[in-house]
Structure formats: structure tokens, C-alpha cells
Length: 361
Ligand SMILES: Nc1ncnc2c1ncn2[C@@H]1O[C@H](COP(=O)(O)OP(=O)(O)O)[C@@H](O)[C@H]1O
Ligand SMILES: [Mg+2]
Image (cartoon, rainbow, N blue to C red; front, side):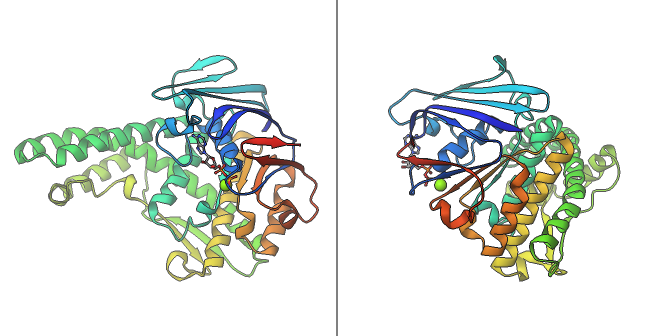
């Protein structure tokens, strides 16, 4: 997949700019706080319908303006595709090839991207929230079924959590089984898709890690719980576990079991990375996982995604940087950095300098 042009109007600190990207490596460079990440964010938004940093679209609109408009003109293996977003304070409109999109799920897959920022380099050190987010964002882009199930799961979960706080115990105990039946149906889809994702991710990540460390270290990833069997069995088992935790859930006022609590276990050199690996090792492992994500996208959609590397080069050591540049040679990459010459080592690229929300020639 390739983005040929990106148009930003009243988006973050951009008033009106058109980016022209090349097929290979595109380097957005400039001082801090000029708009490099904002540009990357716009691309990610057009790929997923979601922002990286915020919950409310309002912050995406240039201060003092009422409406932002962004558009990507791209090419995937089926041909040209244009994705547009009109963002207002309280609503937004997404279009693919001119037709309005009713659900976010319908946006996914037109342009796939893998976003990589210093935050993702902490994927292993950080809490399970980040690892679930990694899976959610990644799986959603290739599976609308997953995305929809996850949305519904979260909605019911919110309702269940609200119910748990109700002081009327008998009402709570009567109503919980009703919620749980629905909850488990969506949970089973989520869990099953995650297990499939991890099964694909693990061998790729292992391979990438071996490459990045010159076979010095091994990387293993496994789901923290074994959900075996088909969706029906998973749902049934989960329902039992939920029922077994009623007392605890009521006491704590939230749901303590389910996919919203699950995690990925990552082992480097046979020991749990989170607990034992050095910062450098966990970063390399995180990089391997993101590169494995790229491979999954290639496998599932038949073409490489757009890779967005936001400020990651400065966080990696020299050998890792060089290896990363070698790996991304055959895919469109948008890389942001402050000093292009310090991270690129003469790699051929399309350089774009950004200053105060403007492209400088
Ligand atoms: N909604 C907005 N309206 C105007 N400016 C914004 C908005 N959101 C962020 N900015 C500005 O964008 C700049 C940060 O841009 P960013 O892309 O994160 O910088 P960098 O080039 O370091 O990646 C800051 O100066 C910030 O004030
Ligand atoms: Mg930035």
C-alpha cells in the first residue's frame, strides 16, 4: 500500500498543506513541535478512524477553527483509493472513494498502517493495557469482525460494571447472568481472534528478533491464558469463570475476568522479559513485535502496510537502526526525526522539512 498524497486542512497546527510521498522512504524532519507527529497522526487516522493520542476528535481541529478536513490519495492492490475525514467538534464524516462510511469498521483495511513510536518501544515494560492496545489496533485493521466484537464487548462490559455498583444486591445477582451470556459471546470472538493473531505473531517476532540480535537472543510470545476449543466452548468456560467471580466483582465494583484483563507473555532468552530483560533488550523485543505485525499485514492483505516510524530512530542503537532501514527498503515508510542525516546513513529517501505546520522546500 502506498499513500501518494496527503492533504491536511485545519488539522492540528496545519492550515493547508499537501504532502507528496514517494514509494519508499519518506523522511519528515524538523525541530521539535513543528508538526511531524501531527502529520503521522493524520495518516493513522485515515487508516483506522482513530487517533493515537486522544479520545476526543475536537483536539484534532486547529485551534480557533471549527472544522478539519484530511484526505489521503492512496493505492492498494485493488487500485486507487481515496479516504477523507471531515472532523467537527461533535461529529465526523468518513468517506472512502467518495462514499460515506457508516461504521468505523468499514474504514479498516483500505489503507493499512503500522505505527511505531517511542511509546511502542515500551510495549514490554509497560502494563498489559499497552499490549492489549497493540493487539486491538493491529487485529482490528484486518478483521472487522474483531473490531465489531470488541466494541460490543466493551459496551456490555461498561453496562455490567455499572450494574456491579448498584446497591440492590438481589437485582444485581438476577441481572448478571443476562449480561454475561451476551458478554461471553463477544468475548469468545475477541479471545479466539487474539489467539490466532498471537499464533501468527510469535514465529515472525522470533525470526525478527534473531535477525536484530544476530542470533544472540531468542524471543518467545505466548498468550497468558490458554483458551482452547471453539468459540462456543470458550464462551461457556468464560461464563463459568464470571459466575465464580460474582462476589469479588460486586465487592470491587468491576469485572475482574475476561479479555479486557488478558495479557501477552513475552520471554527473552527463556525468561520473562518484563521482569528480567534490560531496557535495550525489551526495546529490541518490542521492535521485533512491531516488525512481526508488518509481516502479518503482508500475509493477510497480500501487500505491505504503510510503515510509520515516529521518532524511533533516536531510541535505537546504531546496529538496530541500520537493520531496521534495511528491512523497510521494500515498503512505503514515513519516518520522522529531528536530524535526517544522523539517522539515515545515506539511505535514499524523499526528504520533507517541516516548520511550524508548513512544508519548507
Ligand atoms: N489543535 C491544534 N491546533 C493548533 N496547534 C496544535 C493543535 N494540536 C497540536 N498543536 C501544535 O502542534 C505542535 C506539536 O506538533 P507535533 O507534530 O507533535 O511536533 P513534532 O514535530 O515534534 O512531532 C505543538 O506546537 C502544538 O501546540
Ligand atoms: Mg513528534
